[in-house]
Image 1 (tube, helix red, strand yellow):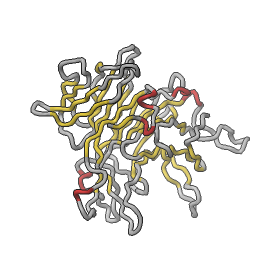
Image 2 (cartoon, helix red, strand yellow):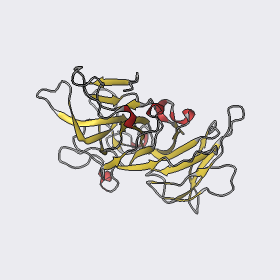
Image 3 (cartoon, helix red, strand yellow):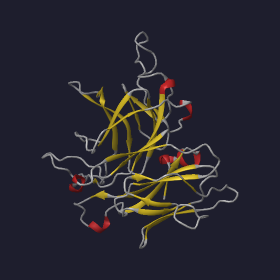
Image 4 (cartoon, helix red, strand yellow):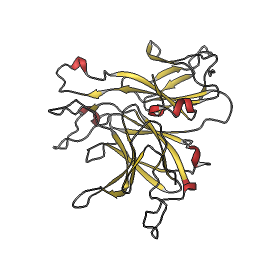
Length: 321
């Protein structure tokens, strides 16, 4: 079983701590088996499937301690169908297995066991209840070569990520009408040498539906209609080389005006298959003494990732604009 330097093994639980695009195998066990005194992997290495997770959810409540800086909590993707012991707990406690722990605007590549039903859910660090509209049940297909960490699908967390207060009400009241959810995007890019892109609308701030321009060499919008929490089809875009880099403008607009726009700079590599995700940096901070100085300020962002090393194998699992 592969082990990477950015993994800290906590007993029987393997959690991605770096969340910087560093691929991680969370296949349970150390391969030694019962006779060797270790734990047995959940599945053989040949049955691993690579999944990319991205945290596009907003509205996370700010934690304001009496002493120390204000912070927001990471969002954990968990497997509620598998329980692991909590290290150091007395009496012993069991908690759902953590697949990955993500900061907003960050992605991670994770390898999970294929050929079996898996249930995924999510909750903020420290939260006791899952806060997602619907758990995701999936059965993965093994990678052709798991050593390549080639993601066959991207799972995006969108909506509002919050927790419940002691009285059972949500910390961010808006989560009642816009709860945390999964957006599952399959990798359906073809094997051609064409530079291609797919766009996901995961923003709560940008209206819906929108048109999207993502190819500077074309006159019209490549994506005619894109609804919130949906993924577009695959379209062509402009790729360029280091020797002659060319920026790519990504414009989100409706019939009346441009809603927001970004410039992918310095370039999209020639032949790359890019996944561009529109999301927001947005925290929920009602106790801020100055509401105009919420940090980070709410604003739309574009996250670009993919299997090309210049897009997906970088800090944060992608490039943010």
